[in-house]
Image 1 (cartoon, rainbow, N blue to C red):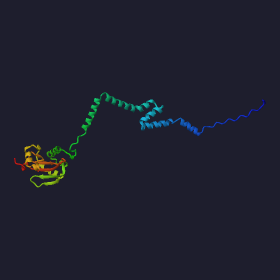
Image 2 (image 1 turned 90 degrees about the horizontal axis):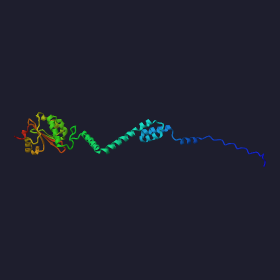
Image 3 (image 1 turned 90 degrees about the vertical axis):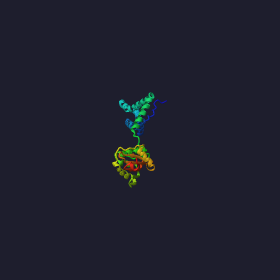
Image 4 (image 1 turned 60 degrees about the horizontal axis):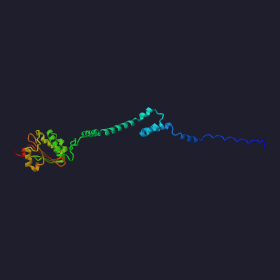
Length: 248
């Protein structure tokens, strides 16, 4: 063997290629979202989806101080405490809870006014009771505020002034005005339908006065009112004295 044989020449080393842009991009993706991005997401979630935001806050925001995270979580603790207290109260003392609920309902009921047959504006409902209308008649004749009765009348009223040609079928406004005939009547009025005088009128003139609500003033004026099925006044009959109808 020839010991002087020349060795083959060495191959040049392959140059190292710098990382490409794609490699840098993949590296950034492997590291995930930046801290600023996470912070923005957590803040938005805390505003628009509070519960989810709390979860991500405790997972992601390692750099936030614990006192801040605890303060932001306090509403959850408060809600849990209230629910626990409510459940405890119901379980441990159900009778008291029922009593408190009933008392609250009763208080609300008392605060809510019970609708009357006539509202505060003086407009009767379609199902007004006769007793309510009669009370309004008594008040109007005693106070001589006859205009207050207009809203308790039918659109048209049969108005009769005894021993005169007045008035026939007239409007409620005209009827209220004609009631001024009673200005000379002296209070108090007696609307006791068992009064002997009223009983005689109803008996002797059953077809005309039998179903009417009659009042007698202290100076003998007579006022009689008929009520329709809707509770409104549809008939008014007046006399300067009941003696024009009966003789005692």
